[in-house]
Image 1 (cartoon, one colour):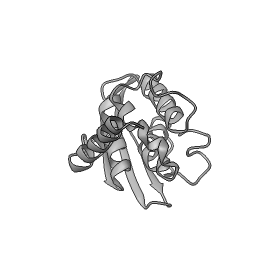
Image 2 (cartoon, one colour; image 1 turned 120 degrees about the vertical axis):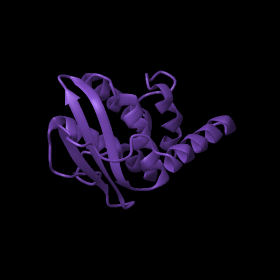
Image 3 (tube, one colour; image 1 turned 180 degrees about the vertical axis):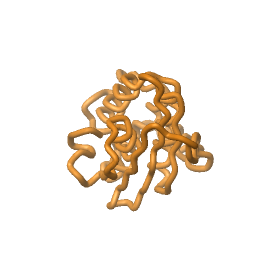
Image 4 (tube, helix red, strand yellow; image 1 turned 90 degrees about the vertical axis):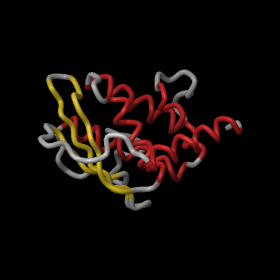
Length: 159
């Protein structure tokens, strides 16, 4: 990772940790799920207002490391107002980039590409994917808490 990429990565993570976007609760969520990362102590809850096939609104709450909070904050910005199918595709590309299965320059991630540097830190990949994991559980209507340790984290499954 070049110095410029590293600087951008650090700047984006710190900005979203300091001022997370869409943080809080929805009054009447249509879908919701929680996620935990036992290895880091991260805990997030994602609440959605899905109208038809559109993520009309999204909020998240919880606490976690800077990477977890920044990734979840950026995720909410990326999927808010978008079609559910697009959110699912974004999750697949984001996960593939972080796990080295897809080249960041070729993935349609928009601003999320600034988090591609996480792939250089394998122990932090689960942190970056936790919010996405909870999002996929919420979309699927799965009320059980999502965990990065349940076999559906970085190696396979829904996240």
